[in-house]
Image (cartoon, rainbow, N blue to C red):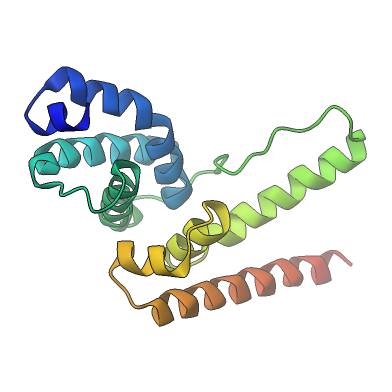
Length: 178
């Protein structure tokens, strides 16, 4: 299917979009923290992928290549959007609540998720991107460095800084509540 799409077969590319659209949107949403912007990023990422598909060498999996495009588009779009409006409430990290847990525990979990989302939105985009790719998607430092075109050391530093900033923000909230 990929080879047909590279040869210009729109139906084959449509199938690739169908297969990867949820994953692309989810990554865009986690990077932008805005549903509308994530939809725009997803659409732009697929447009860029279609244009660049003939040049795709296959050194990485198609999904990995798409992740790279999404990250680039998200960074570009996010910078443009930040000038014009504030971040909306983000639901991109919402986890389904198990029926087996108590209502009190569910409320605590929802409150913590909100705090984490809020603290994550406050991170600078390059730092947030590394934290999301590592801690949410489980990418290795090598994969992150390769796809963001930074050194492994820079990926580790950004991850360390991001986690440290998240910890600091979350502990401040806990101390204020106590």
